[in-house]
Length: 371
Image (cartoon, rainbow, N blue to C red; front, side, top):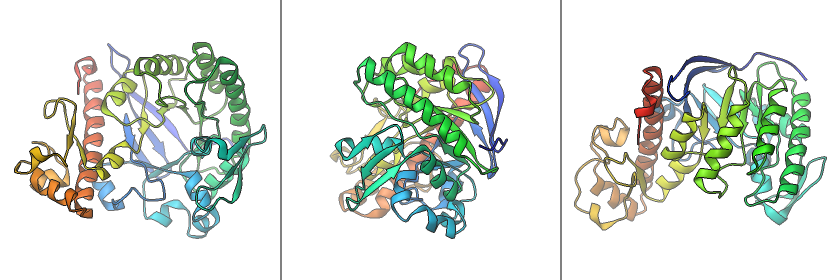
């Protein structure tokens, strides 16, 4: 175990009415304002978007996937290239997940023991093994700024006995993850679990808070449970985490979830949602533009619609006048440019949404901020 200050969180202001936080996270590859949404670059790339375009969007940090990079091209090759930043030509911060969520989502293709998880590659079926030590070793070779402790993501629904056993194992794995860290230029975040049980969530947050992590994630939410239950478990989780360290809600990227997460003191978010729905032909907009905050560009109502996706939007597509009719044509014709325009728009939408929330927090007006 090596104790460092590679990652530090600076709390700038808390909204007086809600407690929503505006801060700065300091990393070896630059500082960024929080709250923030992290675009997901699963395979060392945010699908269809260049690093320069991400930079122009204002993304201060992106997420890459340990499980996928462990399988292909392999951590040794990335290390040989000089680490993930050089490999993918990204000069800002990178967070790598532990691989836990992907491994546990394999269902019957994996076996969990105290030592770790044996599973079969989804690529070629070959047997693989991940443990807290291997996950951290892989993340050190990748050279991310923030590595995640190896944890078990509890499915929904799960009974109390299973959730308790799983959460306690996650705590033991958290200690092993910390002890495996040897880089002084990398921070490690612990992950709060506990399923949908209030006492387990409280215990998990308190247990992890007592460990010397650089920040804390809240895992095992947005896995199929009702929204109100998710928000209840989130509130319990953040209540017992230290204020002087960053809080990260994993796998959340819809505006309503982001808004509720920020209201409960979360600083960082990630999700494939904005890029995935873009590839399916959907644009994210404010509810003042569309009642449900979405435009499905395949719909025939846009055939003769010569307006931009959203008036006043500063994304590449909207500020350059690409119309709904044109984008619909591209999507229906399976042209890659249409998917790129929607991806750029959706990522800009969320980056701007987070900036607006930060401004509302700094003005002590977050309670009046809406979708």
